Amino acid sequence: MTTYQPTPADRFTFGLWTVGNVGRDPFGEPTRAAMQAPYLVQKLAELGAYGVNLHDNDLVPLGASAAERDRLVADFRRSLSDHGVRVPMATTNLFGDPAFKDGAFTSADARVRAYALQKTMLSMDLGHELGAETYVFWGGREGSEVDAGGKLLDSLGWFRDSLNYLAEYSQSQGYGYRFALEPKPNEPRADIFLPTVGSALGFIATLEQPELFGVNPEFAHETMAGLNFTHAVAQAIDAGKLFHIDLNDQKMGRFDQDLRFGSENIKAAFFLVQLLESSAYAGPKHFDAHALRTEDEAGVWAFARGCMRTYLMLRDKAQQFAADGEIQAALAAYRVEDQAMQALSTFSPANAAALRAHAFDRAALGARGPGLERLDQLTVELLLGLR
Image (cartoon, rainbow, N blue to C red):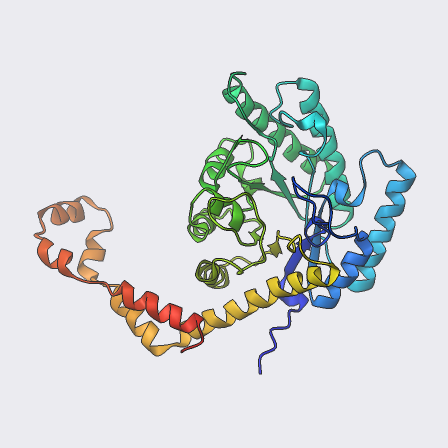
Protein backbone atom coordinates (compact mmCIF):
# COMPACT_ATOMS: atom_id res chain seq x y z
CA MET A 1 0.00 0.00 0.00
CA THR A 2 1.34 3.44 -0.96
CA THR A 3 1.95 5.64 2.07
CA TYR A 4 2.83 8.84 0.22
CA GLN A 5 5.59 9.55 2.72
CA PRO A 6 7.83 12.33 1.38
CA THR A 7 11.60 12.06 1.42
CA PRO A 8 14.33 14.63 0.70
CA ALA A 9 14.61 13.11 -2.80
CA ASP A 10 11.21 14.70 -3.58
CA ARG A 11 12.83 18.14 -3.09
CA PHE A 12 9.93 19.64 -1.15
CA THR A 13 10.70 22.92 0.61
CA PHE A 14 8.91 25.37 2.88
CA GLY A 15 9.71 28.91 3.93
CA LEU A 16 10.35 29.90 7.52
CA TRP A 17 7.50 32.35 6.96
CA THR A 18 5.12 29.56 5.91
CA VAL A 19 5.24 27.04 8.74
CA GLY A 20 6.24 29.91 11.02
CA ASN A 21 3.08 31.89 10.21
CA VAL A 22 1.41 32.87 13.50
CA GLY A 23 -2.08 33.38 12.11
CA ARG A 24 -2.17 37.16 12.08
CA ASP A 25 -4.36 38.81 9.45
CA PRO A 26 -5.41 42.43 8.77
CA PHE A 27 -8.40 42.01 11.09
CA GLY A 28 -6.99 39.88 13.91
CA GLU A 29 -4.02 39.27 16.13
CA PRO A 30 -1.91 36.06 16.09
CA THR A 31 -3.62 32.81 17.01
CA ARG A 32 -0.41 30.77 17.41
CA ALA A 33 2.80 31.27 19.31
CA ALA A 34 5.94 32.02 17.30
CA MET A 35 8.31 29.08 16.79
CA GLN A 36 12.08 29.47 16.52
CA ALA A 37 13.84 28.74 13.23
CA PRO A 38 15.93 25.75 14.47
CA TYR A 39 12.77 24.07 15.75
CA LEU A 40 11.01 24.63 12.41
CA VAL A 41 13.95 22.97 10.66
CA GLN A 42 13.74 19.98 13.01
CA LYS A 43 10.00 19.53 12.45
CA LEU A 44 10.27 19.83 8.67
CA ALA A 45 13.04 17.23 8.63
CA GLU A 46 10.83 14.86 10.62
CA LEU A 47 8.13 15.25 7.96
CA GLY A 48 10.55 14.44 5.12
CA ALA A 49 11.12 17.91 3.67
CA TYR A 50 14.26 18.60 1.63
CA GLY A 51 14.82 22.25 2.44
CA VAL A 52 13.79 25.49 4.05
CA ASN A 53 13.87 28.96 2.49
CA LEU A 54 13.92 32.37 4.14
CA HIS A 55 13.73 36.11 3.93
CA ASP A 56 16.59 37.84 5.70
CA ASN A 57 14.40 39.02 8.59
CA ASP A 58 12.73 35.64 9.06
CA LEU A 59 16.00 34.68 10.72
CA VAL A 60 17.60 37.97 11.78
CA PRO A 61 15.20 40.66 13.04
CA LEU A 62 15.64 44.22 11.84
CA GLY A 63 17.94 46.09 14.21
CA ALA A 64 19.69 42.99 15.57
CA SER A 65 23.26 43.54 16.70
CA ALA A 66 26.15 41.87 14.89
CA ALA A 67 26.58 39.48 17.82
CA GLU A 68 22.89 38.60 17.84
CA ARG A 69 22.97 38.06 14.08
CA ASP A 70 25.92 35.69 14.35
CA ARG A 71 24.29 33.72 17.18
CA LEU A 72 20.99 33.29 15.30
CA VAL A 73 22.76 32.23 12.10
CA ALA A 74 25.02 29.79 13.97
CA ASP A 75 22.04 28.16 15.74
CA PHE A 76 20.19 27.89 12.44
CA ARG A 77 23.15 26.39 10.62
CA ARG A 78 23.63 23.87 13.41
CA SER A 79 20.02 22.76 13.08
CA LEU A 80 20.36 22.47 9.31
CA SER A 81 23.43 20.28 9.72
CA ASP A 82 21.94 18.18 12.50
CA HIS A 83 18.79 17.41 10.50
CA GLY A 84 20.16 17.21 6.96
CA VAL A 85 18.08 20.15 5.66
CA ARG A 86 19.25 22.54 2.93
CA VAL A 87 18.57 26.20 2.11
CA PRO A 88 18.05 26.19 -1.68
CA MET A 89 16.60 29.71 -1.97
CA ALA A 90 16.80 33.03 -0.18
CA THR A 91 15.05 36.36 -0.61
CA THR A 92 14.81 39.81 1.00
CA ASN A 93 11.97 41.41 2.92
CA LEU A 94 11.54 44.63 0.95
CA PHE A 95 7.91 45.11 1.97
CA GLY A 96 7.62 45.20 5.78
CA ASP A 97 9.70 48.24 6.71
CA PRO A 98 7.75 51.54 6.48
CA ALA A 99 10.68 52.87 4.43
CA PHE A 100 9.37 50.75 1.56
CA LYS A 101 5.78 51.98 1.72
CA ASP A 102 6.04 53.44 -1.81
CA GLY A 103 8.42 50.90 -3.26
CA ALA A 104 11.93 49.60 -2.71
CA PHE A 105 13.76 49.39 -6.04
CA THR A 106 11.02 51.56 -7.60
CA SER A 107 10.72 54.22 -4.88
CA ALA A 108 10.77 57.80 -6.12
CA ASP A 109 13.22 58.48 -3.26
CA ALA A 110 16.80 57.67 -4.34
CA ARG A 111 17.77 57.13 -0.69
CA VAL A 112 15.17 54.36 -0.35
CA ARG A 113 16.40 52.71 -3.55
CA ALA A 114 19.96 52.76 -2.20
CA TYR A 115 18.81 51.31 1.13
CA ALA A 116 16.98 48.54 -0.74
CA LEU A 117 20.20 47.68 -2.57
CA GLN A 118 22.16 47.63 0.69
CA LYS A 119 19.58 45.44 2.43
CA THR A 120 19.50 43.03 -0.51
CA MET A 121 23.28 42.72 -0.70
CA LEU A 122 23.42 41.85 2.99
CA SER A 123 20.64 39.31 2.48
CA MET A 124 22.49 37.82 -0.49
CA ASP A 125 25.54 37.48 1.76
CA LEU A 126 23.43 35.58 4.28
CA GLY A 127 21.84 33.38 1.63
CA HIS A 128 25.22 32.42 0.22
CA GLU A 129 26.53 31.70 3.72
CA LEU A 130 23.65 29.24 4.15
CA GLY A 131 24.17 27.59 0.75
CA ALA A 132 21.36 29.18 -1.30
CA GLU A 133 21.74 28.94 -5.08
CA THR A 134 18.57 30.74 -6.17
CA TYR A 135 17.61 34.26 -5.16
CA VAL A 136 13.99 35.38 -5.49
CA PHE A 137 12.72 38.93 -5.93
CA TRP A 138 9.10 39.48 -4.93
CA GLY A 139 8.28 43.13 -5.51
CA GLY A 140 5.36 43.37 -3.12
CA ARG A 141 5.74 47.14 -2.70
CA GLU A 142 6.90 47.78 -6.28
CA GLY A 143 3.66 49.32 -7.53
CA SER A 144 1.14 52.02 -6.80
CA GLU A 145 -2.29 52.93 -5.49
CA VAL A 146 -2.46 56.05 -7.66
CA ASP A 147 -0.45 57.04 -10.71
CA ALA A 148 -0.45 60.79 -10.08
CA GLY A 149 3.27 60.65 -9.34
CA GLY A 150 3.96 59.94 -12.99
CA LYS A 151 6.84 57.56 -12.30
CA LEU A 152 5.86 54.50 -14.33
CA LEU A 153 8.63 54.56 -16.93
CA ASP A 154 11.16 55.77 -14.39
CA SER A 155 10.14 52.96 -12.02
CA LEU A 156 10.77 50.29 -14.63
CA GLY A 157 14.17 51.85 -15.28
CA TRP A 158 15.01 51.96 -11.58
CA PHE A 159 13.87 48.35 -11.20
CA ARG A 160 16.06 47.31 -14.14
CA ASP A 161 19.08 49.22 -12.81
CA SER A 162 18.70 47.59 -9.38
CA LEU A 163 18.53 44.06 -10.78
CA ASN A 164 21.50 44.70 -13.05
CA TYR A 165 23.45 46.04 -10.06
CA LEU A 166 22.65 43.01 -7.90
CA ALA A 167 23.59 40.57 -10.65
CA GLU A 168 26.96 42.31 -10.89
CA TYR A 169 27.31 42.14 -7.11
CA SER A 170 26.64 38.39 -7.11
CA GLN A 171 29.27 37.84 -9.76
CA SER A 172 31.82 40.10 -8.06
CA GLN A 173 31.42 38.07 -4.86
CA GLY A 174 31.52 34.73 -6.64
CA TYR A 175 28.05 33.78 -5.38
CA GLY A 176 26.80 32.36 -8.66
CA TYR A 177 23.15 33.09 -7.92
CA ARG A 178 20.36 32.49 -10.39
CA PHE A 179 17.69 35.13 -9.85
CA ALA A 180 13.94 34.55 -10.08
CA LEU A 181 11.29 37.25 -10.35
CA GLU A 182 8.01 36.44 -8.60
CA PRO A 183 5.00 38.08 -10.27
CA LYS A 184 1.82 39.10 -8.44
CA PRO A 185 -1.02 41.30 -9.70
CA ASN A 186 -1.93 43.13 -6.47
CA GLU A 187 -1.73 43.06 -2.66
CA PRO A 188 -0.31 44.76 -0.76
CA ARG A 189 -0.22 47.45 -3.47
CA ALA A 190 -3.32 48.11 -5.54
CA ASP A 191 -1.27 47.38 -8.66
CA ILE A 192 2.10 45.64 -8.59
CA PHE A 193 4.65 46.07 -11.37
CA LEU A 194 5.31 42.89 -13.41
CA PRO A 195 1.95 41.37 -12.40
CA THR A 196 2.10 38.10 -14.35
CA VAL A 197 4.60 35.53 -15.60
CA GLY A 198 4.33 36.92 -19.13
CA SER A 199 5.15 40.46 -18.03
CA ALA A 200 8.12 39.23 -15.98
CA LEU A 201 9.48 37.28 -18.95
CA GLY A 202 9.19 40.37 -21.11
CA PHE A 203 11.03 42.47 -18.54
CA ILE A 204 13.83 39.92 -18.14
CA ALA A 205 14.65 40.30 -21.83
CA THR A 206 15.57 43.97 -21.17
CA LEU A 207 18.18 43.19 -18.49
CA GLU A 208 21.92 43.33 -19.10
CA GLN A 209 22.39 39.63 -18.28
CA PRO A 210 19.01 38.02 -18.97
CA GLU A 211 20.52 34.55 -18.78
CA LEU A 212 20.90 34.98 -15.02
CA PHE A 213 17.21 35.72 -14.51
CA GLY A 214 14.12 33.54 -14.58
CA VAL A 215 10.78 33.41 -12.82
CA ASN A 216 9.33 32.03 -9.61
CA PRO A 217 5.63 31.68 -10.49
CA GLU A 218 3.09 31.14 -7.72
CA PHE A 219 -0.20 29.27 -8.05
CA ALA A 220 -2.15 31.80 -5.99
CA HIS A 221 -0.80 34.86 -7.79
CA GLU A 222 -1.77 33.87 -11.33
CA THR A 223 -5.12 32.60 -10.01
CA MET A 224 -5.77 35.97 -8.35
CA ALA A 225 -5.47 37.51 -11.81
CA GLY A 226 -8.00 35.02 -13.21
CA LEU A 227 -5.31 33.21 -15.20
CA ASN A 228 -4.45 29.55 -15.68
CA PHE A 229 -1.37 28.81 -13.59
CA THR A 230 -0.42 25.68 -15.51
CA HIS A 231 -0.35 27.71 -18.73
CA ALA A 232 1.97 30.25 -17.08
CA VAL A 233 4.32 27.51 -15.87
CA ALA A 234 4.36 25.93 -19.32
CA GLN A 235 5.37 29.28 -20.82
CA ALA A 236 8.18 29.62 -18.28
CA ILE A 237 9.41 26.09 -19.02
CA ASP A 238 9.24 26.71 -22.76
CA ALA A 239 11.37 29.85 -22.31
CA GLY A 240 13.89 27.98 -20.14
CA LYS A 241 13.04 30.36 -17.29
CA LEU A 242 11.41 28.23 -14.59
CA PHE A 243 14.08 28.78 -11.93
CA HIS A 244 11.86 28.11 -8.90
CA ILE A 245 8.16 27.54 -8.19
CA ASP A 246 5.71 28.34 -5.38
CA LEU A 247 2.94 25.81 -4.81
CA ASN A 248 -0.24 26.60 -2.89
CA ASP A 249 -3.92 27.06 -3.70
CA GLN A 250 -6.32 29.94 -4.10
CA LYS A 251 -9.96 30.84 -4.70
CA MET A 252 -10.22 33.08 -7.74
CA GLY A 253 -11.04 36.71 -7.08
CA ARG A 254 -10.04 36.63 -3.40
CA PHE A 255 -7.18 38.12 -1.42
CA ASP A 256 -3.93 36.13 -1.46
CA GLN A 257 -5.00 33.09 0.57
CA ASP A 258 -1.93 30.81 0.37
CA LEU A 259 -4.07 27.73 0.93
CA ARG A 260 -2.73 24.19 1.34
CA PHE A 261 -1.64 22.80 -2.03
CA GLY A 262 -4.46 21.02 -3.85
CA SER A 263 -7.09 22.00 -1.29
CA GLU A 264 -9.24 24.06 -3.67
CA ASN A 265 -8.46 23.45 -7.36
CA ILE A 266 -7.68 19.75 -7.47
CA LYS A 267 -7.88 19.34 -11.25
CA ALA A 268 -5.62 22.35 -11.84
CA ALA A 269 -3.18 20.97 -9.27
CA PHE A 270 -3.20 17.63 -11.08
CA PHE A 271 -2.35 19.16 -14.45
CA LEU A 272 0.38 21.24 -12.80
CA VAL A 273 1.99 18.18 -11.20
CA GLN A 274 1.67 16.30 -14.48
CA LEU A 275 3.44 19.16 -16.29
CA LEU A 276 6.25 19.46 -13.74
CA GLU A 277 6.87 15.72 -13.64
CA SER A 278 6.92 15.40 -17.44
CA SER A 279 9.23 18.38 -17.95
CA ALA A 280 12.91 18.85 -17.30
CA TYR A 281 12.27 20.91 -14.15
CA ALA A 282 14.46 19.46 -11.40
CA GLY A 283 14.40 22.31 -8.91
CA PRO A 284 12.75 22.47 -5.50
CA LYS A 285 8.98 22.30 -5.15
CA HIS A 286 8.37 25.07 -2.66
CA PHE A 287 5.13 25.32 -0.71
CA ASP A 288 4.52 29.04 -0.23
CA ALA A 289 1.42 28.57 1.89
CA HIS A 290 0.42 28.45 5.53
CA ALA A 291 -1.99 26.74 7.86
CA LEU A 292 -5.40 28.27 8.39
CA ARG A 293 -5.66 30.87 11.13
CA THR A 294 -7.97 28.50 12.99
CA GLU A 295 -5.16 26.00 13.64
CA ASP A 296 -2.84 25.35 16.57
CA GLU A 297 0.71 23.98 16.16
CA ALA A 298 -0.57 20.47 15.42
CA GLY A 299 -2.58 21.98 12.58
CA VAL A 300 0.56 23.60 11.18
CA TRP A 301 2.26 20.23 10.80
CA ALA A 302 -0.94 18.66 9.42
CA PHE A 303 -0.91 21.44 6.82
CA ALA A 304 2.74 20.86 5.88
CA ARG A 305 2.27 17.10 5.68
CA GLY A 306 -0.85 17.61 3.57
CA CYS A 307 0.93 19.78 1.00
CA MET A 308 3.54 17.11 0.37
CA ARG A 309 1.14 14.14 0.46
CA THR A 310 -1.20 15.78 -2.04
CA TYR A 311 1.67 16.41 -4.45
CA LEU A 312 2.76 12.77 -4.15
CA MET A 313 -0.79 11.51 -4.63
CA LEU A 314 -1.19 13.65 -7.75
CA ARG A 315 2.17 12.43 -9.04
CA ASP A 316 0.84 8.90 -8.64
CA LYS A 317 -2.32 9.91 -10.51
CA ALA A 318 -0.18 11.36 -13.31
CA GLN A 319 1.57 8.00 -13.63
CA GLN A 320 -1.83 6.25 -13.74
CA PHE A 321 -2.95 8.71 -16.42
CA ALA A 322 0.10 7.81 -18.53
CA ALA A 323 -0.56 4.06 -18.10
CA ASP A 324 -4.33 4.11 -18.67
CA GLY A 325 -5.03 2.44 -22.04
CA GLU A 326 -8.38 4.14 -22.64
CA ILE A 327 -7.02 7.59 -21.81
CA GLN A 328 -3.96 7.09 -23.98
CA ALA A 329 -6.13 5.89 -26.88
CA ALA A 330 -8.27 9.02 -26.52
CA LEU A 331 -5.15 11.18 -26.50
CA ALA A 332 -3.84 9.45 -29.62
CA ALA A 333 -7.16 10.10 -31.38
CA TYR A 334 -7.08 13.75 -30.29
CA ARG A 335 -3.81 14.42 -32.12
CA VAL A 336 -3.96 14.11 -35.89
CA GLU A 337 -0.65 13.48 -37.61
CA ASP A 338 -0.27 14.26 -41.31
CA GLN A 339 3.25 13.81 -42.63
CA ALA A 340 2.60 15.67 -45.86
CA MET A 341 1.23 18.73 -44.05
CA GLN A 342 3.98 18.62 -41.45
CA ALA A 343 6.57 18.56 -44.23
CA LEU A 344 4.96 21.59 -45.91
CA SER A 345 4.96 23.40 -42.55
CA THR A 346 8.77 23.50 -42.63
CA PHE A 347 9.54 26.67 -44.54
CA SER A 348 11.17 26.74 -47.93
CA PRO A 349 10.02 28.73 -50.96
CA ALA A 350 8.81 25.49 -52.60
CA ASN A 351 6.90 24.40 -49.46
CA ALA A 352 5.33 27.83 -49.11
CA ALA A 353 4.19 27.74 -52.74
CA ALA A 354 2.76 24.21 -52.34
CA LEU A 355 0.97 25.13 -49.10
CA ARG A 356 -0.54 28.22 -50.67
CA ALA A 357 -1.88 26.12 -53.50
CA HIS A 358 -3.22 23.24 -51.38
CA ALA A 359 -6.99 22.77 -51.28
CA PHE A 360 -8.15 22.09 -47.71
CA ASP A 361 -11.50 20.49 -46.92
CA ARG A 362 -12.63 23.17 -44.48
CA ALA A 363 -15.96 21.52 -43.83
CA ALA A 364 -14.28 18.26 -42.79
CA LEU A 365 -11.81 20.12 -40.55
CA GLY A 366 -14.64 22.01 -38.88
CA ALA A 367 -16.85 18.95 -38.46
CA ARG A 368 -14.31 16.83 -36.64
CA GLY A 369 -14.88 16.42 -32.91
CA PRO A 370 -11.61 16.06 -30.99
CA GLY A 371 -13.15 14.17 -28.04
CA LEU A 372 -12.16 16.58 -25.29
CA GLU A 373 -15.38 16.11 -23.31
CA ARG A 374 -14.61 12.40 -22.98
CA LEU A 375 -10.95 13.02 -22.16
CA ASP A 376 -11.87 15.47 -19.45
CA GLN A 377 -14.44 13.09 -17.96
CA LEU A 378 -11.89 10.27 -17.93
CA THR A 379 -9.52 12.59 -16.07
CA VAL A 380 -12.20 13.40 -13.48
CA GLU A 381 -12.97 9.70 -12.99
CA LEU A 382 -9.28 8.97 -12.53
CA LEU A 383 -8.94 11.73 -9.92
CA LEU A 384 -12.01 10.43 -8.08
CA GLY A 385 -10.49 6.97 -7.87
CA LEU A 386 -12.89 5.32 -10.33
CA ARG A 387 -10.23 4.16 -12.79
